[in-house]
Length: 362
Image 1 (cartoon, rainbow, N blue to C red):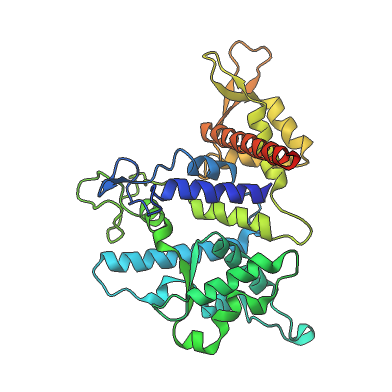
Image 2: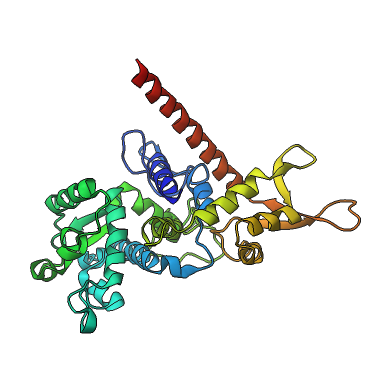
């Protein structure tokens, strides 16, 4: 289930961040354009996906993936800011180096009773980086400015042939970063700038389109806090959560229960007086959490929806004329949209499978 969400993200990312020719869209949202190409429309696919895959309350599941995505995003942001300010940007600060990993995760190889074994934190970092490379979100650089296409091809070839075998750290990205030659020349991994990440960073951190005195997407000016960003949701953290769910648990895949709860809430929704499906009874809301053995999360999710803009928004409303008083939970329309997109994917997959069966029978 989390893997399907990651595959959905890949599809929505490409549909949203790239134009029909596969080129990156500019910053500023759909009302902005550059050379006839409009900016990104986040509302259609990516924000609904984020609402369905927003970080859980238990952040320990995504600590390392969050570190990786935060570091990658911040390093590219700093490079773009330096360029906007007319400074000679430091390529070393454009991505993650082995020194960055070591300073946060410790030495790559352990000592003491675990002498010679790879540090589990480095293994977790490797899994996240491999998943990002698999979907073309990062690039490998052998020097400050030289991209290493050979090493990217080597690692991708390993991924294609890995199967269910345990991770071979010697074949991955972290091993390459720890080579002394790579370290001496400033080798690193960075986000793929022209794959939509520059637009996202400018839309999330930079100036919105149409604000007098500000250049759309500019990072060299401090944007007033009362301005709503073009993309107000930390999409990279939702991606970090999903990657953690796919890669992070040796006992199985994290995140299935969380997705099941959100899906069940939408499937249990009923229409309002105008016929718009947008609510569920408070009793049924709690029942769904209880049936999935996460009743303790029901209240937390209600509260976090008011403090975390990545989370689906829920609102308690009194049922008119109820006696004794009864309550409904209004459901975030983006969460409903997320489930609609899921259904479309499920129908498409079923049709594809039927087509495969028909082809096999001929």
